[in-house]
Each structure stands twice: as structure tokens, then as C-alpha cells.
Image (cartoon, rainbow over all chains, first blue to last red; front, top):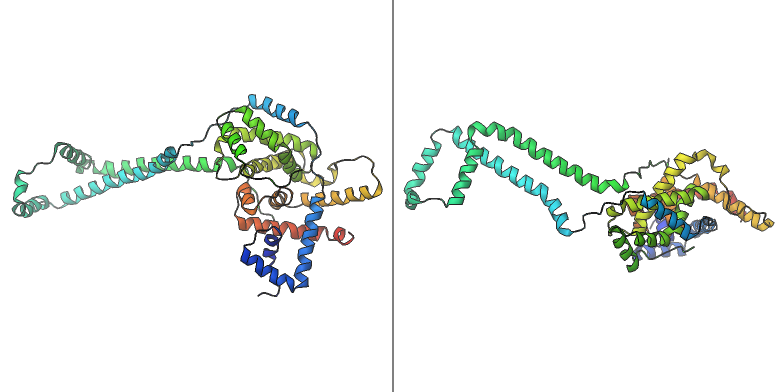
Length: 202
Length: 187
């Protein structure tokens, strides 16, 4: 054990904020250390002096005070209720996840399509390789909704449009995500924005 | 004055919920419940009883405006005390420069017997020593010593970590022990 109680422990000890094990350790030390007991007593005496300073003197009556606040409340804009429903919070969190998922999907599709287009004959080679092994593939037709989706993807990811998706989509998604982040930051920091203090302890 | 109160009384949480829905009567109930304590927090921070009531009213108005932002996961009193401390600091910066500590009125200035006079003098010294602390340390000390908030509640009120609460309290008490050493020796 250290020769004396760490000064950082003295206040939590006095304020009852130490864990049971830490308190036992401190008690054991205090029992045999007059210097630490004296330091603790000085702190207790200080607390006594602080509490001897009288509270704020009574001015207005409680009712008059409350009435004045109520009067001023009428000329003050009412508060905006916070989103209290759990599903609203879930939706708030889900927004960037969905945005990222959609963005990744389109990017991956565009990349794959471009890769195939970059190698002329690759699509033909793929068909030639796969067709004999998949005898049923000749007669295979995609279900209507899936086929429509494939056409939509090929339209979005068409080579002549790829530069648009490569530039516009990331910017659009990035802006949406940044605005979501700004909204989140404003919600979290608005109530405490004015308690900005400097540590002037030196 | 009541020093320590329970942070989670069901009736209080009901009042807060009602007030969050725009119920002015419920908010008036919260004003009556916390008036004395909010005035005291402000008074201990700024040292002026006249300014303290005005700043406390400002604090309640701000609380009303921001009630929608209060999250019940933190103690209501921590949230309210944060607003009160900000109101006190705003008022202090606007109305009275920190250098004018000696001009602050002492409560109960009627002629007193000698013993009471000495007691008042000592209380005045302690009060000035507290007011001379940096705002950050003073806020932690006021919430702990006069209002019995736990380290966790102080951390919530001041938006700092419990480790920082410990270091601010440590600094404040060491500084006060140093400043008040002559007074403590003659007690």
C-alpha cells in the first residue's frame, strides 16, 4: 500500500463514492495513519464551514415567484416536444443504414456491369461456358418482377450513364448523410451548448 | 433547506411528462417544487441574492422552452441545475464583473451581537473564497456540498465525466483549504 491515501481518493471517501472494497482499504490505512486522518478531518471541517454559510435569503413568496414565471411563459414560445416514440428513434437510426445499403448496391452493380463491358466477349464466353452445363437454362425465364428489376439495374448502370452514377450518386448520398449527421448533432447538443467553460485550474 | 432529495419520485416524473406535453399547471408544480433549490444554486454561483431570483426565473423559462429535449434517463434535477448554473453564469457576466466580490451584500445585515457578527464575517469569507474559485470547480462544489448530488448526477449536470468531477472537487477543496487556512486555525 502507498504510504498515504491518494489525494484523489480523499474526496470520494468523504463523499461516500468509493466502492466497498476501496473503502475497506482506505479504512484500514486510516486506522494506522494519523497524517491521513488529520487531512480527512481538515476536509470535514471545510465541509462544515461551507454548510455554515446561510442559504439564499427569501425574497418573493413561492406563489408570487411561480406566478411571475407563469406570466412570462405566456409570452415565451412553447417547447417543441421531443420524439418520444421508440419507432421514431429506430427510424432515425435506420436512415443512414438504408442510405448506405442502397448506395453500396448501386455501386456494386455498376462496377460489375462495367467489368463485364470492359472485357468484350466475356459475356458471350460466359454464356457459352454456362449453357452446356445448364440444360434447363435455355428455357429459363426470370419471373416478371425480377426481370423488370434487372432491366432497371442495367439502365441505371449502363456504360454511358456510369459516370453519372459515379459522381452524382456519391455526392447525393453524401449530402443526405451529412444532413442526417447535422440533425443528429443538433438534437444531441442543443440543450447543453451554452455550458462551455474553460478549465482554469492552473 | 432540504439538502438531499430523491431524484426519482414517481410524482415528479409524472409532472415532467405532463409538462413535456405542454401542461402549464404541471410545470408550475415543478417550479414550486424546485424554486428554493434553483435559487440557492444560482445564489451560490453568483453570490447576489437579488440577481439569484431573477436568474432562477430565467432558468425556469429556459427549462420550459427546452423541456422537450429533456431525456428521462438523466435525473430531472441534474438537467434543471445545469440550466440554472448557465443562467447564473450568464447573469453574472452581464450584470457584475467577477472583480466586484467585495461589494456583494451579505444576507441579514441587521446589527447583531458580537458572536453572530463574527459568524457572519466568517461566512462572508467562506462565501468570497467559493466565489473566487473557477466557475467549473465552483459548480461542482456547489452541487456536491450544498445540494448533495452524487458524482454521477454532477457529471450529468455539467456534461463532464465522473473523473473530471473528482478532479474539479479535489481542486476546489484544496484551493479552499489553502485560502481559508488562517480562518480554520482560529476556529
